Length: 328
Picture (cartoon, rainbow, N blue to C red):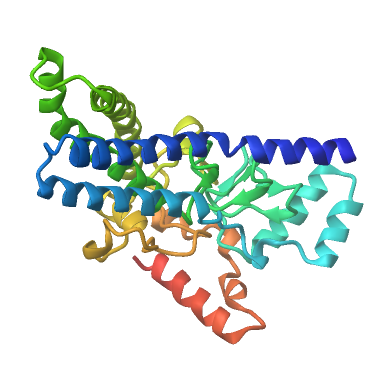
């Protein structure tokens, strides 16, 4: 037990290494650009410095939000009650266990199934998995609309922070492009010997190299995620199509590019580029492509039971969200 705890502790420590690498590179780029190019060489216009700081602040803000926004987990509605949990664990017949989960899921807006056709259930978290929810073995929890676990942010990218992750990629690209374009002329001057050799030459050369290298790699990743957003898929769903009552359908959640984008960025376009949470819904249910056919899913036969709650305000909020999604 002590050894296992020690290994988990070491794993948590080492998981921060990629974040420290990115942070170190960004801090060095700030020093090289502001202190070496601007303060030492005195070659950069003040306007360059102002734009640089805007890009730097937005990059740091979105990176911080991507790292420290905790992944959202299923609410208590999807947890088994004490009696249901006891009944499920005491039952040894797999078919009967599946039927127990089906009965419990009738109260919930669940459309997707496991590959076997059974209700998706997490034995480790003891919850019925909402649509697009998956268990992350690194975070050791079920994550709503899980996309992937990213080592570079040391966090699960999912419903709670997917917008922040997209903005982090976009501002990273903008940061690299701005550095590369403004440093390029001084890179060429150093290369042909028009500027004196010195410590700043090393920083200029590596600024150019690192900016271009990161730009190329980030563009591939950002383009891929833009494609995922347009199709309304997660990375996991791109590799394995979600299974519905009618069978697998990789476009099951695709409701059109405009509405797909709004699910991530929200309806207010003024906030699209600001790292504040504006994604639609609460991550437990999503509009479906075949809304009319799926709305008769027997799992929603007792839809009113989903809205029942001991907390009246919570019930009202969930009821309004359910009404919004199923009447879009």
